Image (cartoon, rainbow, N blue to C red; front, side, top):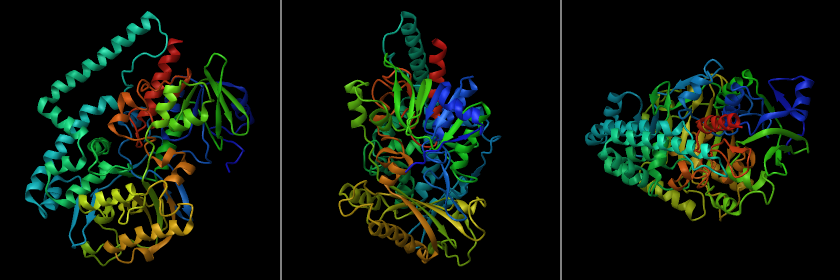
Length: 567
């Protein structure tokens, strides 16, 4: 049960607490996840009065750090940083506000049951040497593959940092319609120029990547199973899709379009855990004058007689009024739960309801008393090595393994041999665990929301699945299970209940091609505005989608500021 008391971050005075109830704010933000905080920071920097209302006792949403085992601090949900937009980091001065990124090199390690392993990183010569152990042909192709993806990412970059060119909604003046047409013409002209620069051959390759299964894309490039499955993990992570699902190629691209300090595709740990990202953004918002309130659950939007959002009701019945409201909740939560009945158009509600919020993701956070020793590395000392630095891919040595794991979930049961992405951030971040002990994150697929052979509410069933995952790791690192001090597990229903992710979907909704750009969250409403005047979306359910990007929050704030200036 959520606590009824409310805590204000940024001000502890009685006047500020009174202001939350009595003052009419320029903008209220529902949800203190990283996108909600980002929106608040930009809105406050424009001179608006802003309050962020967070349901939990802690800010961050899915980008949160929690001490779940005494002495061990876990990035409970999201666990790596790369997608946070460079413009957000620069404009909000997040490094000044405490953001410290820890680059990983090597970035991935895939042990094999036959005693071999594949280790990839930033060093092109090292990658060539590693891949050559399996295939000289693939080693030569890998640089070309990376260069092509980098080219596609540069093509998409401008789209991520801008609002989609949506058709003007509602009744508008002639000048507004003309301005909208000019904006859309400029947008598409820029896209056409970029496409011409890319060239026809690369455009065809780009379309093939978007529309094809990831398995087809990677099979066209490479012949080595362990290389293809290591790269293919990025195509299915956080989804219910298989590597053989058409369109999974885009998800692969989505996960390499980020950067760390200018290095494209490089993922990093964040010192202090992923909650430090949210904390840095919150610090920027507070500095600009925003107030962040925790333990403040919103139960419903307040709608004026004219059909405009004018504030929210908190769970304890307290009304908080504002000129506009931005929701960082999922589209389903926003429109099906928070907006009163009979306010929104039926066709819009139907589209929201029928959107894909399915998930097959489970996150297990562990405290361990010693580092795992992988058989394939043939090391017998306890010190951290390069194999511990990056993402460790367990149980996915070929596409057949990955497809079988996905098929189990399709049949209604958790994967018999799950796909596990294992990270040990405490190897680089000494602030999150006691000396000599470590924090481990397991991102696991596939686990259906409602398994047909049991229930996630059953402690015995949960424990059995956790032990299945630990035993799989034991195959590659004998004795891992015995190193576990304690753990926390979030299945899809747990992610929905604890973090507010509808269906447990980490992206606030599917990242399929039918749910992106002008189609996100639904057709006709991709520009952060909604059919309810005064209500905007600013979370991952809006363009450009999921991951710790900050782009939806930043873009939504710019749209709100633009609308307020017009008024």
